[in-house]
Image (cartoon, rainbow, N blue to C red; front, side, top):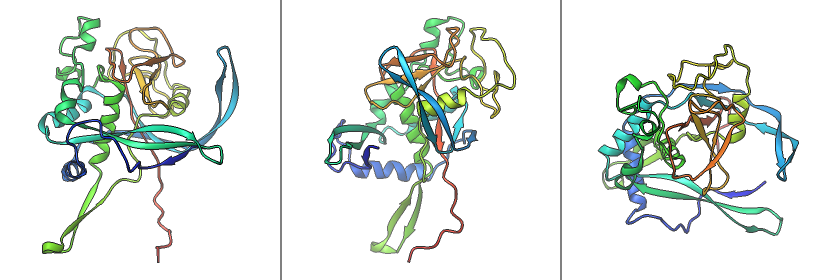
Length: 303
């Protein structure tokens, strides 16, 4: 197993004049606001057999263990529009997503992995936060697809993998809780973040959910549908092989992976594309997950 360091102290910030104070201000601002909750369903922990590629033409079965997690349906135009509106109204703020840097192996033969923050200012993010014409470029029926309220409950497209990750970070930041301690000059704020973060699904998580049997089956008619109008599996999740392809987490930050078919194809859940993480199109969207952590009601207090 890789050795992961949560924070790399010496970080090269990839944008101008961003300080830790700015990041604190973002978290504090989000902690005093709320966003509309996104409906998610629980998937139990499990062990399963999955295919692992061996070379170009063969594979072998490997045993995979997954923690229980929550997963949403496809993120809608309305849900993503709340994000773009916040970015537009908070030009002085910053957002942070993480990037893994892999180093050499240590004396135990384990690869060193550092996780560093990638910060971006809202004035820089706003121009590329979405290509609102991405679908219209492919199908002239969908003029004003992102902004027209009749498409509120349709899946958002025109969002890159990187910007989907910023959306997840933005949702997580609203769950920080700030508590004032002390008075006068001794007054300080103590922040407490959530135990688990919103994120893109791991590929194996997405694949497991996509393989669940459907309660009802509709043919892929190569057209867009509302997020909740489709082939529903036993957990009430839909459109894992049609509607839009979906971003999943990739092990390399320079690589973006999308899974599943879309309105543009007759593909299925086995469809897998490798794309530039800053690119976007009119047939790829995303859904989000977070790892489930049970509340330890009988945990012995620290002394």
